[in-house]
Length: 78
Image 1 (cartoon, rainbow, N blue to C red):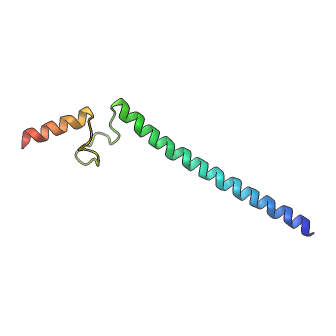
Image 2: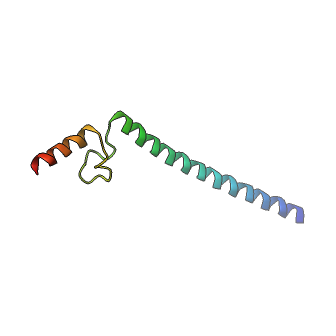
């Protein structure tokens, strides 16, 4: 009886570890996909913030056409 309990427990541990690592792997893949998409869109010149420039965190460093247009309009109005 003792050996059968050890097998059941080891199967449970195996199932837990497989589930844990599969979840971790899916999370890493999702986060990697998000960062890759952000970089790909930035390289193509597509805004990642739906072109809401003035409330964007990286507005000062942004060189996309929409941001440059907003910066020019702000400078003209001052």
